[in-house]
Length: 189
Image (cartoon, rainbow, N blue to C red; front, top):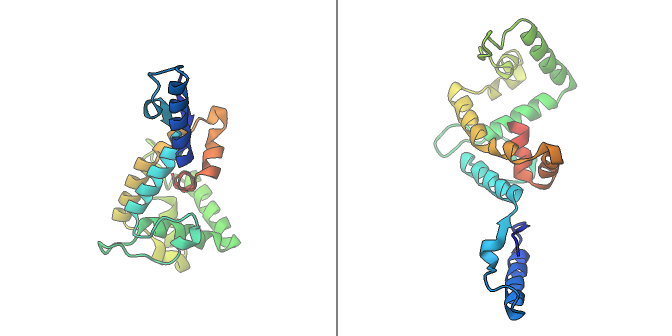
């Protein structure tokens, strides 16, 4: 008897225990153990880890509802919550069709004029920083270097979820739809 890949639902614990008991009762396999033969579904594990990471990195409790990340949130350390800040920045840009167009134009022009990259692909100015600097209504959302550093650390740790999907089997889109924490990570990373 081989291994079983199952999601993390408790009913599957019961199933595996029942399988173990049934095999022993029928003298089919005495070496089968439910715990050793069960493989947890990797996207579920990644989703759980991504949710925990998001909760630890943010003073805003994790939520599947993106509206829960509205408003400026100050962390217990006194700094701004970078996850809430990113969410508010996206909402601020998407609040206006003109802002969306202006943001896209800023990126296109910056790429043409090489404002954002050096010959070695070293970022000189972030497109978002430049855009927010020239968009008065969003100036309060500009991130400090320390906030960018915290965000980059979060993205680095959570980027494992991007590598966990197998795009050749179409799991990437499936994981983003089914697992909310993975969806948030994919959208940020």
